[in-house]
Image (cartoon, rainbow, N blue to C red; front, top):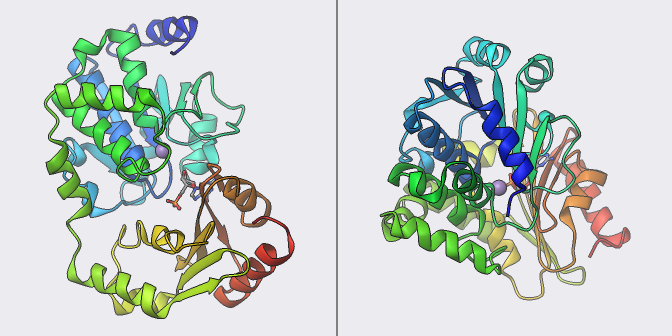
Length: 337
Ligand code: 5GP
Ligand code: MN
């Protein structure tokens, strides 16, 4: 349940429907980020808000492009000036699915400078102290789940439209890997059931998200597993690394490696998995774990990142070879597994 005082505060701030509202998500936005932002976008515009915009720091996977309202998303790497102006002129900024302004790369400075009232809705641990109002709950499956609670508390469940429900459903499904992790809370299923009652076609959404691989993406997955997987059985660690050349060979598109790291984690005896990818002059790192192995701590301590206990990410500015060596060293000697 969300605090009544906080909901009243949000309602008060949102009183004027002509106010300018910006919904911002994190860099490399995933299904939960985009689903949450578009879910809230539909809700607010349906409620009569006249100036609502959705801002993503950069591009995202094509398997999310079917989401209703996708054409409304402003990609800051494409329309930088517009994105910065919207933030500077905003009355209210919603920060969705991230816990610190630096997670929205290229927009963070503008958000810090903006006089806008900043509302966080998020489920990552250790939120930064730079928001005016925080709805932060690490016990929920996804930001989309929290956003359902927020909308229901603010305006009542009956005001949630089919479009919003589809977006929130997509957020819950992607952040739980189709209810395979972070999904032991009965409330997640109660909310999912409500979204289905609203008319969401869960079968269709599953198809749109998971069964729309290009042939090249599927072959890249095969290559990752047969050629690029290293397993450290004694440590319970498995990882995959992809150089720029590997990615070019398979004509890599944004989102093509989504989910690859989970295959490494599905090997028996493996409790920590990683994916290393050369991207824009650095190595992007995705980390996944099971049980008590804490990849949030690992990412924060060694790889300039963070995230959740069992799903985190970071980056390295060293070469791939040296990054992999550091990783091997950390998991062998630092007692993380
Ligand atoms: P992914 O591996 O799917 O990119 O990210 C997994 C989780 O880690 C997500 O919750 C995401 O927000 C978080 N994450 C990914 N990259 C970074 C990063 O560079 N910094 C921080 N703080 N979190 C990250
Ligand atoms: Mn999330």
